[in-house]
Image (tube, rainbow, N blue to C red; front, side):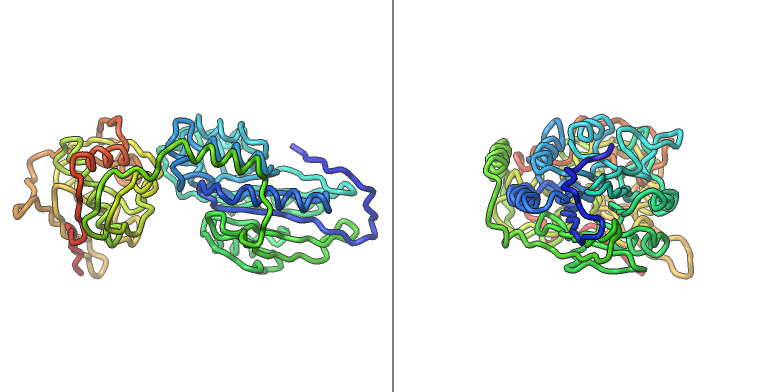
Length: 461
């Protein structure tokens, strides 16, 4: 798709400015969009060459966006009011099922570009494009290609495949041949952006996301300007390209603090207030008798909710599914339950032997360095780290006794844990509940909770 701006008889010899306004990783934060819309309108009144881009992760972080049947619809509606020209998907958009994902892309008035999202036959998956072309004054052509990180739940992808992003970008190196400017709109993180700039110097600007890195003035790597605005709509990115004879002669970047923007789009502000009233996030659902000091304590609460409410012998949770690093003592609200886990993964029930449980824990332990690898309910375990390349060993106990090697135990885990760490040949039942739903049921039965001193995992070296 090609976007046309009004040609105001730009002189080839005259210096002019192209402005790129960018966001990344809003994660459902809505409140600053009215200021953004007003700011974009202000810029366009004095310069018709203004383009608006987003570098992914629109969802997962605001229950108003996440806890509805048509997940993500409100933020696309709001972005359409700005409006945006080009977006790429973040890994959190790939957590949506493919039907809802395509619905969100079709709902959007901006073009979604993702060169490394394919379907099974290797072609770019519609309705995505590898790149799009923006047309500025004097017919100047701007190519914008998109890239998305591979870190997502594979069970949500269905017919989609996320290929290695930098290799996908290198296949587009010829964009420079028939475009005046090339922009990478990426959701792969600052480190990967730096590698991309080193390997693909034909790119002029990389507008990035994923690592939540705020780069106040951008960073030049191999002559490529890399930008990123942090996260959660705290800042706008403003890239100014100085153009002479349809060539960039200077490029600068700055972060625009929303506190410095006074005007708002009142219509958009009213729309957001309407969305914010759809769920009572302040409703009390429980009481924490003491602080939850870390993810581990929250993980044990959530694992207990799974095991207790589904009458399972054992349950596990993973830190990747918990967005809170602590929860203070006092009122636990509906918003707390929803915000600590925006993913809404279904629960799977397995019947596992002790050996299969050990394999699960080992697989989670190898995934990253998070300690402990899995939070548990119904058992305690000790992970003995190996030395000199030998296998880790795991001791599983229920109370003071080790688990029987001859029995099978009912075990609850969510679909992320299952898809990442469980072998495909093990059968399971899908439960019609998500972890937040089970936690709400658990808190209804246990009004007051205290996990401040709960520890069920020992890690020895």
